[in-house]
Amino acid sequence: MLSICSSMISSPSPPPPSSAAGTTRSIPGSYGFPLLGPLKDRLDYFWFQGQDKFFRSRMEAHKSPVFRANMPPTFPFFFGIDPRIVAVLDCDSFSSLFDPALVDKRNVLVGSYMPSLSFTGDIRVGVYLDTTEPGHAAVKKFSLDLLRRSSAVWFSSFESNLSRMLSTIESELGQNSSSNFFIPLQKCIFSFLCKSIIGVEPSVSSEVGDGGFVMLDKWLALQLLPTVSAQALPQPFAEIFLHSFPFPFFLVAGDYKKLYNFVAKHGAEVVSIAEEYGLTKDEAIHNILFVLGFNAFGGFTVFLPALITTIGRDKTGLKQRLREEVRSHIKSEKGVVGFEELKGMELVWSTVYEVLRLNPPVPLQFGRAREDFELNSRGARYPVKKGELLCGYQPIVMRDPTVFDRADEFVADRFIGEEGKRLLNYLFWSNGPETGTPSVQNKQCAAKDHVVATACFMLAEIFRRYDDYECGDGMDFTKLEKATATTATVSAAAAPGGVK
Image 1 (tube, rainbow, N blue to C red):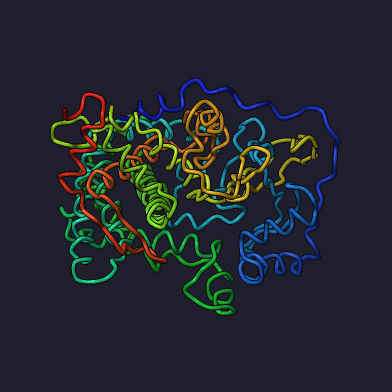
Image 2: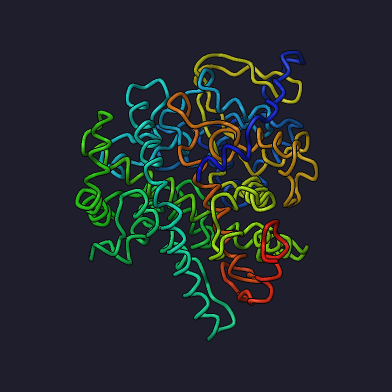
């Protein structure tokens, strides 16, 4: 299945190299006075401006996509954290974050702030390791092997759980005008990931069972709350209670122990594979939980709702085009989505890529300069000093008008054709370009191909089952119109070799 991804982006033209020539400029911007400067930037980031305006207003003020600023979390109860960053907000400068020769990735997953290691069993799991550290290669090799082995059940498990989710939503829509899909979707994601990665359904455990996804939600929230905007509380209460101090692990220690025991008991075969790569049992389980909970569950929880609602709210006729493409490619007598069929659905793939461009699951990327170097950006060069922290904000980077036409617009077929393949060089959602390959030499997401193929499969399944669907302003379906036998037959007849 994953070979589909490779074939979709094979042999693209390489990205044009950064201009070595150009004017050398000092990096504009200021960190302000100690304490006061970081506090002002923190309040702008979370309260007065918000994340997007925080970066965009400074880029406009300095007339440069590269500038200095402070990033939260900061004062008063975050100790040993240097909030100073160099923002990189165009494709050229942002790409430096993926060059292991230029940047060090140790302990900078969410910036200078690093959640307590208690959340990962007092172990620095793979995501916190730089490529030069001895443990990185073993963890990355294990992660890649784990995902390769999971491919045998990945899509069948996802299909069965997706089917269960959609049946629940259909039932609710039969009684109400709308159905919130967020919790059913999280259950679907958690269940299929447990089956694919650990090897069992969560229902085998009375402790994890239906509540495992909630345990992961809380575990994720306590680690990330100091760094993300929160809608749960109005200002200034959010600043006082959510952004002023790190949260202690003991609040979720009991839940994490249950998840640990679940993997230890039911994932013994997977743990033994990790031990073949030189990991201890403890290291294996904590890395498995991080891959499952933070990377996969957390990423899908952000991305799939964005994909569903973006298409569900579309008024341009995209849904009809997607439905026609999906059904024109289904040749199976059982009417199921097969691997070869999915491979030919160019609009489906391009739509998924476009949603990833505008809604990257991880909006911020960080890297610390290994040595002094010159950062290239739009024909200018900016001297960066060893140890400075670079920060890229993808929702702006992925709207770089020098790379993408109509950069602020959703263009579903943007990534179709030769020009579309070329643009995949600048799709950076996975901690690297879409044309890149995850390896022990880089920090690119090991599950990059799994994520894209899963999203495409979900879209294909939805439009195989339904003639139309609509979403409201929140995470809810307001319409699910089942496919009729007539439309399915007509679509199949339109396919090469379809019904005659």
